[in-house]
Image (cartoon, rainbow, N blue to C red; front, top):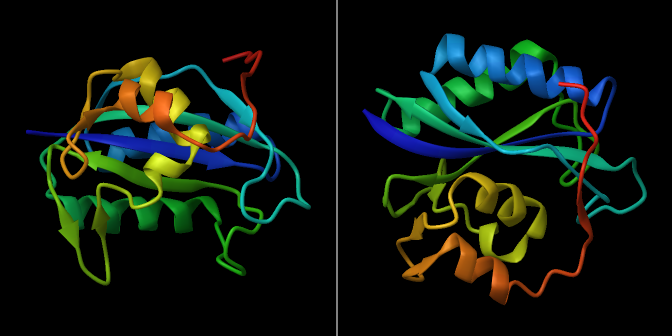
Length: 163
């Protein structure tokens, strides 16, 4: 079994329900969710003139290899109704693989660790909730260290979730 750290995000519709549905579908299609972070709310990153996002980090135990997992996650996004219209645009659901074991991969389909992880507080804060000692295999640093060094100033606050 492999350990994969995922980040889910949404800023369209019932955001909490979208995160919950993503967790259910990930469990059905990909493996067992061992941990999940608190839900965090963040202003949009990249394209700022849109609704704020809810994000949650997940620890998945899976038998799928990284490319197979990515295919399943993209399929889940489609099942939930995601439409890819513009980069950094609004989205019903976004599911990223942040870390997969200590795998380093860079091809046209999948880059691991996620190339923007170190630049995004909205990913590092929830990830630090569940895996402060997870290791970035390229930078040779823990998630806690990456969060301390992150220059992103975007506010990330815990969301008062009903889930």
